[in-house]
Structure formats: C-alpha cells, structure tokens
Length: 362
Ligand SMILES: [Zn+2]
Ligand SMILES: [Zn+2]
Image (cartoon, rainbow, N blue to C red; front, side, top):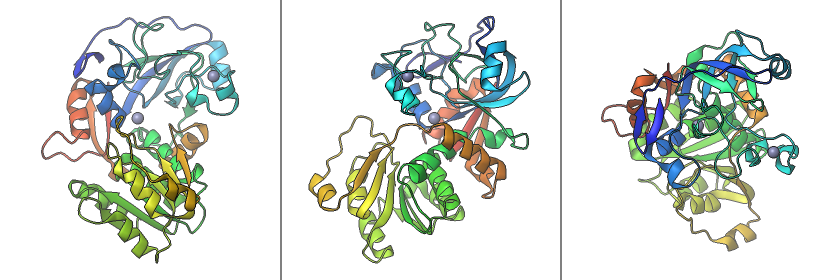
C-alpha cells in the first residue's frame, strides 16, 4: 500500500529487488499501527518536510526472514525462516550520536527527513521501506530482534508500544521500586507505560485520559493502575496531590498527544526533585510552562524520542511472558487493503469502534 498523497493509499505491485550479500528480505507477517501512522496518513510527514510521496508507510513490522545475504546473516545472527521484529531507525554506526548510543537520532544516512522504515520515500534506494507491504528489503544497517518462538503474532506487533513504555516510564526517569508514577495519556503508549511500571515494581500508577477514553482508562485499571483521572472532568494536579499526600509523583510521563497544557500539569504534579519525561508530541503547538517552578523544584525535564535496543528486548520478553493478559490491548486486525479504515479507527473517527493496538496483515 503506497501513500501517494495526503489521505490517499493505493495498492501497487512492485518488483522485489535482488538481495545483496549485505542485505536481506523480510516477508511481512503483520505491521502494528500507532498515532504516528494517523499523522502520516493525514500528511504530517510531508507537510513537516520529513519525507515525500510516494512512500510505503508502516514502521512497526514483524515478519520472517525470506532471504539474507551471507554477510548480513552473520552480522544480524539470523537465518532464512527466523521470525524478527524490525527497529524502524536506520543509522550509520559511526557518528557521534551513534557512538553515544543515540543511534535513533543519527541523521547521516539521510540528512534531511527521517531515516526510518515506513518514512523513507520510494525514490530513496530500492523503495521497499514500509510495513504496509508483503515484503521489506532490509538495508545493511537494519537492526533486528529475534522473536521468541512462543510469542504469538497477535502480541508481537505491539513491541513498539510496550518498548516505549519501558524506555519512557522506566529507563529514562530511572524509576525505582515503590515509586509513584503519573502517566498522562492512556493510548497504547500510556498503557505500555502502565505495563512497564508494573514490571518495574512501581507501587502506585496514576493514569489520565479524557472522558471519551473511558474504555482505555478501564483497561489501565485492569492492567494494574491504581487511579484513573478523567482529565477533562477533574483537576489532574489536585487529584495527584491528594493521592500522594501533597508530595507529588516521583515521575510524570507525558504521553498526551496534542494538548500542550499537560506539560504544565506535569510540572505541578511532580514531586520536588522529581523527573518529567515528555514523549507526547503536541503537533507543533508550544507549551507555556513556568520555568521558575522547574528551577525551584529542581525538576529533571527530559525529552524522549523512540525506544532503543534494550527497551525492544525487554518489550519482547514482557510480551512473551504475557503476565498481564496483553491480548486485551489488541483490538483490531485488518488485511492491508483496509489500511485507511484501520487508521480511521485508531484516530477515533469511526463511530462505534474503540481502537487501541491495531495491526495490518498482507
Ligand atoms: Zn509507531
Ligand atoms: Zn550515526
């Protein structure tokens, strides 16, 4: 499925290129969708100058190695027939960001635009860069994760949502046993954060969402959050202070999309010396924050973009162990031809449908 314009996908037959010694070919089994797919479909990638049409979307694919060159197979540790999840980012491995472990911020392979599966335009290289397809041609710099044999496909496609929770709510804020964590936003990433916090031994998880997200807030509670705050009906900061005896949360993770005011809620709801992680994109809308409060409270404010190797490995373990009945997050699976419909459900635009984690299969 090729995106040819804003809100326009079309099915095309594209010849699969030959696989060189340093490359591979992935037969896509399924591709997960997230809020970035909604934004990309609406035209956000091109309007922000990060890509151009035509492109094949889909940055959360899992599949089977159909072919692999000798050098690539040795480097990736995979053989034909292995099931893998693909990390979206392509990096050079040699620049300052790569060497510092921030390979997801590498800009060398494509200085303007996103160097990521699902976002590279078809004019770049061989063009088969997206998970909305039967096959992805694997670049030499691809990063793959072997899937545990026992992990069902239905769960495997949620690896990026869970990995986001692991990095943003546990690794980056250095969340510790017994902490109180406020998770702002209850979409797939917010629920991923709830699951990661459970795994990390967080004692109190507080989740916020909107009144229309009632089904997601209910799921957050079922997954082990202790408190759900309806942010458009209640005062989030007052509730958090009440729950924590006036102290505030040890960690606040802002995953709320589009709403800049949640950033100032985070600063008010976090404890003195606490950490706020910002991972919810606001679509370019600037947040107005009281920086004096950040100073007086000595708050650590961290931006978080993407997940990273260790978080993906932990996500696949969590999905495979499945101690939280994670199939509850997987609301829809559609054939590739229904990609636009699936994106509409995820965007909340289809009456009567409540989507959290969705995937497409070719
Ligand atoms: Zn995504
Ligand atoms: Zn690099």
